[in-house]
Image 1 (cartoon, rainbow, N blue to C red):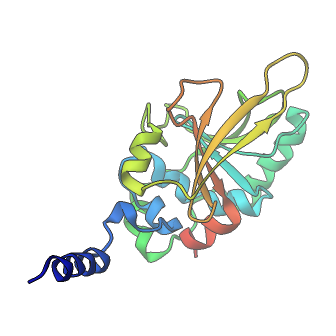
Image 2: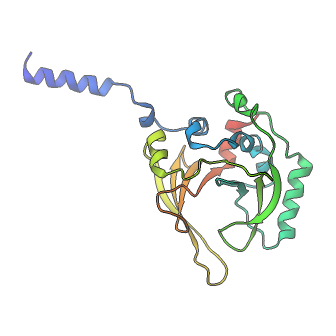
Image 3: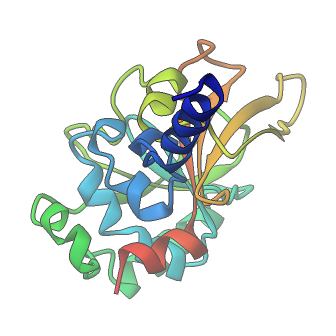
Length: 210
């Protein structure tokens, strides 16, 4: 075999080799089922995302110790109206799609309340638990995300303005699944550590819930 034909054969083998899992595009289902990127109480959140969306939230923030709707209300009373909407529509777990049902069996409901976030001066609807909750692994890093899902499709920034002299929160968003899920670093926390995961509920909920 000549050097030219050997090189051609090697090129064909390389081209036809299947992609490793980390090289394949990460769709919503794959990201949500990657257990190493989520905390032990994450199944409880999955079961309540539909109710959060139906109450009027379009985006959810997932922190280590709680989840929150992205909508910021100027007063606690205004945020409480959305909390009541969640409660009256039923904050109980929705029925999940078959591929997520094993996770649903582990899901004890999260409590619905209002709280401020580090983001600013508004009040948000939050999902947590009185005894504590772990929705993300503590100190999850962007490098770990990349090792499991591959390089992000896009890296963008988002600035969340605050009132007064406080520094704005600047998120660096490592986006996957066409932007439906983003792992975010924050200028308020250690570089390289995932401070929150941002979920686009209009895309994520139909994948998760019936």
